[in-house]
Image 1 (cartoon, rainbow, N blue to C red):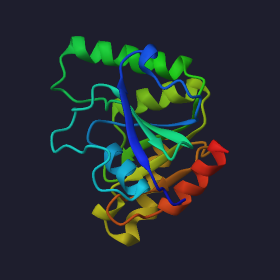
Image 2 (image 1 turned 30 degrees about the vertical axis):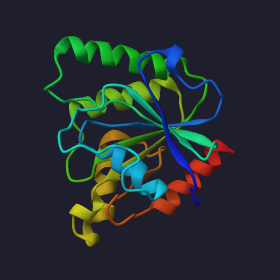
Image 3 (image 1 turned 30 degrees about the horizontal axis):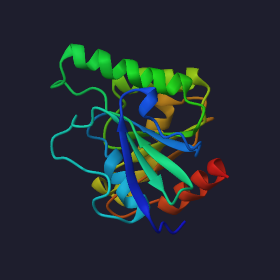
Image 4 (image 1 turned 90 degrees about the vertical axis):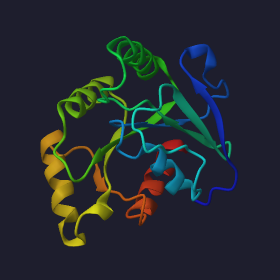
Amino acid sequence: MIVKNPQFEVSAVKESQYPKNGLPEIVLVGKSNVGKSSFVNTMINRKKLAHTSSEPGKTRQLNFYNIDNLFYFVDLPGYGFSKMSKQEQVKVGQFIEHYLSTRKEIALIIFLVDIRHDPTSNDFLMYDYVIRSGLPCIILTNKADKIAKTKVNNYAKNIQKQLNPIGDILTLPFSSENKIYSQEVWNIIEEYIN
């Protein structure tokens, strides 16, 4: 897909702030420093539409990026970052849960994990939540450029075996740096938004 005019549309913390145009939503979940904003920028071939930060845990809202009035990328706040107070974590957790459990426009969840590390307890909790939601999901093992090319497929398989041992969820390596699998991810997104 060639993206011509992507726009940041809104940061939302409650339902009344969500877009009302009914476009399908591709939702990005993952821990704080897994590279969700970089994923958005890579997919739309822009450097800075989604703000990336050297300090993880900056995103505290749902960020809606309108992609050519065809669909939204929705970047959820990352989890597992300790600088957020317990009170803030609860508040953020509640509006994420509300969004995931009530939003009819969600077409696909893209669950990002770091290919270099085994899934954390927070990854397992979020994965279980996504599975229980019944929403379509794929797993992207991000930062594939950080390991030797010859090891990428084995690392991705290892993460799939841990998170999704029955193997019924597509798991792909991904790299925002060198765009590994970005065309495959576009093909999947196009299936879900059409």
